Image (cartoon, rainbow, N blue to C red; front, side, top):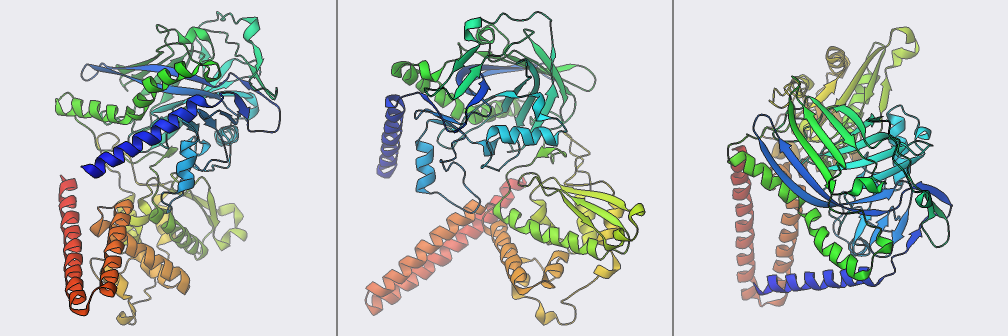
Length: 596
């Protein structure tokens, strides 16, 4: 208890000095770009109220409040120690395989709120700013970014590296500064997301009156950032999109969603009774299933114009609700489930176009071996084919095109097939199948889950053609068949039997370095599944504890007398055996627990 008290006191002191730095620093906007630029709007703090109401199959409602921050897209800036937007000098991203670092901790402590472009639209590419990522996304949607020279992002910022954003809103404006399109980043509780692009239309033709004096201003002291106001031609704008993401554990992946928006840059949308944003879910039979309404708790605030006392009161009132958003959502879901109102659905694999959960380092490390396997199969295929491979979108955005050698001689008869794993766990599962036939029969099988019965873990445009490519007779090899003693000892341990998988056979014919890397990865994966409940982080904790125990044994043996050292070593070995026995028992108990 004493140690816990010290830890809490230390945390309180750190947060206190963190808050003091925010309040005492000058809150002037400083542009991080050397070039003059023109943006729409300015950084604003939006205290929001979210009201959720369900109509079908049961009636239920709840509300939540959170803080959203709006930033002009393309503006890289800092506002004192309060807000950092696309500050490339900060180390806000933790690469896979790297743990805690002082530099990253100090980066998060340098600003109360931060926007990291790597979290938005497609994951990664932290070297790009928000505007560059937006332009890339629009081009992927076959849209011309020049249609929308202005954009404004409303999202949940990071606080000490933590952020839980259910939806992020991108408002796209034309050259005439009218809202014309929207991008909704939908994030579910399973770390999955889908980016929805939609054109919006006016609900009415009555334009809002914009004060002339507020249309243009400079945001910084050096007159490099020119801000213009929006010029809406309607009070409301509307758009519709098809629901293709497992957004709620109580909903199926079907139906339509209609949205109605107000321009967030106009003070009329900040009134407590104004419908800042409405979202209505409509079932396949046309019934209204649920509706959400978002309103402003008060006017949007310009942080550069707030006094220290106003800012202190605001941060204490609105920072915590944002941190507790996930806990609030989980609580409401459990309440609905355990009161018998509705039953939770099993999560389905994502559909094409969606982004799966973040991949683990093991999954990313195994992907090149599967890619090499596909390339080898295509290279040896005797007919002209073109295989388009889309690596799992949770960590890659590239598209790989592979062509068989006969394509050069017969380009007019090329057959095409596309393959896309929807789940990063595919790369670990694929290493466990004895044959490619078994792998395809399993991975291509529709899940039959209630929320999305046709969902699959592997998406293939032509299953028969893919099976033909991967089952080519020239690929039938078994490098271990001639001499079973050549089977690496590691295989007989990490498999449940001595039978090798087809991926083992393929990699065993490659160069020694690749073989060593592959078997090291799959051995680690076996450790994770056997002892750490499938969690790489938990295995890391085991490794840390084991290394501490080993160091203690070595130190004891060096510092104690011979008899005492032998006794200490025996005790340490007994403790090590007990430790790994407990780990084994916990892993078995964990599997039984998660089975039910």
